[in-house]
Length: 131
Image (tube, rainbow, N blue to C red; front, side):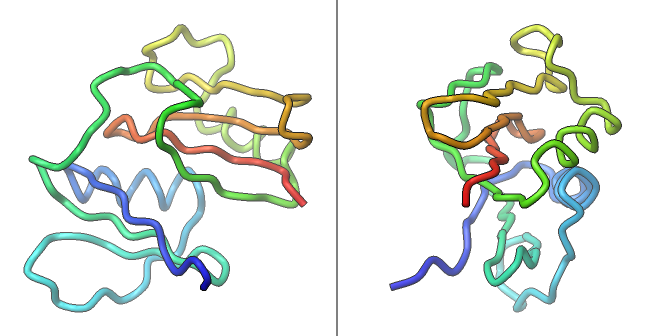
């Protein structure tokens, strides 16, 4: 058994496509003609699927709760990735609830560095330097 993709429920496909393309430099790939609106991205050997579903399950909180549902990207250049996020407007010192908040754990209990942020629909995204 292997993971194939992660599906993320969104409300505005254009906004979410721009976010995942611009923030994570993901390449959009062809998506079959489903009856729902969505977009697919390549992410290494895996995929990220965005699905528009206004009545889907969304987080109400605008805070980053690392114990809540999330998915993670792994990078070989954690510090370079963080510099890139900061250059795009994310900030560690942004207050809780700010959509540009970046939560960092450089020496966390996982044994590898982790960063967390929210997408436009408050989905929690982790970026880590796991090996």
